[in-house]
Length: 75
Image (cartoon, rainbow, N blue to C red; front, side, top):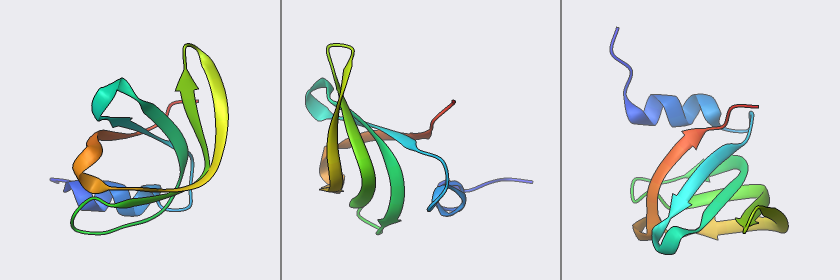
């Protein structure tokens, strides 16, 4: 059974945190609240990892053209 990328994102909605890698080497972790076909993301309880320290960012809207990858986090 082949799983499609959007099916995996649908399963991640409002569940465990996802890790989003962005252009420029930034990495954000948060609960995926929504997305669209352009990969614009809404993340709740977002945290940005800066030099090994997690800084809280709250709710974020991430523009899709900055996203390198999205991964369900392993906790």
